[in-house]
Length: 499
Length: 99
Image (tube, rainbow over all chains, first blue to last red; front, side):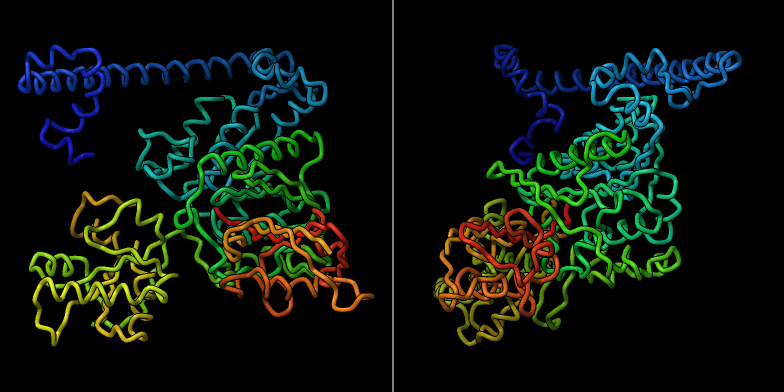
């Protein structure tokens, strides 16, 4: 796409092109390229002047907001002189009366016979900690802010990236590169400035978990890895906090409430962590954006029920969501286990025990979602993407086998590579032999050396597994390209798409 | 005996990406009943096509797999000793961690 438009004067113009095509068609034909460039710079300067105006307006808005807040609290202070029952932070007086603003804002909740003033007042007096401002956290945070939770904490150490926006709907293009917590907090404040938002721009870990979580009534687990799930569960058990746990991957989601009202905790259900190979990540397996969206919304719902003390929270039951077949199933799960190591009768999980527990070791998988880096091969069985590029430029006879799954290969691939997914390698070795022979014939190479065999994948792990296998199968010269297509994009061709 | 077996949370990938299997499983002798203890090896032999270790560990399912018999955690019906009946629905679901 970028390459296609490169001859014209930059991205900005390309971006605006469709508008010109529809409204100024004749104009473009008559005036040709010179005017197009001119037009682009005009647009550019208009954008710049609009942005300057926007910044001024933003500044004015925040000044007015500050003024409003201080005059509001002045009013409250005056009111408190006559009526000492009013609480300025939540808009609820201690006798449960909502302020006029609160009544208007939450009127649709108050009209619900099964919710009403009492539940809304409970909500306004509650606090919720949302751990993770990603695919699950995005909708959960937006709804929790909108519904009027009194105080809301957001924990995340990540920054917003372009490939998050397909599902992490709380963030916007303008916030790419910014901390997820800041971005999410700004979105929540924009919806409801009466909610107190606390930003925790740090990784949630055993050294800060107890201190952070202690300040909240309810915890929403919106993280994306196994060690965090065990850690958050144990922390909730130690502090006696209900845990709204959601997970999503691919086209499926799961939801339940742990450690609530005598119900089971995560460890009651999963005392032994699964093998690492069973812990798939969205970054590897993919996820349809709306799936964590659905589960995140349901997490907000369960948090609201627990906070407002209405309905039957999903404790002792689990909701299983299968997006592809449009099936939602709610199943009954076991109760609290007497033998549970976190919450059982002889449980050893204390604050001290928790602080010293090594969750990464326990689950054999890392907190961070940074991808695995294998190192299976000796140095002479590997080459860098730069070296591989040099060999292409020299015209060396070679065959490049791409061992990614076929649907990955369809996203993007290097020219002249052949796709044999790792799982199918064993049955398709003859294709490799045939390609090598063909290449040797074409390039009239010195047959004592033969054509080289290179293997590539997305990040350079599967390619090493493939080379190991190929060596065993007699393709002793096979080499893997270190770091895979990602390193090709980083070190050789910055325009090569990554995913 | 007719049973419906369902695989989810990624476990379907071990059986040709098919989630729902309607199967016929018979007890070894006429009087005997089919329990989960007998069903698991039957599944191992007849349905699992790859990476067996992702489904079973020892004579039970691997850690992280939830087993539901008629929408109820098998812990509540006796785990491996759960006696199956005609038309039962057994769900095997791998717990998810993504988000």
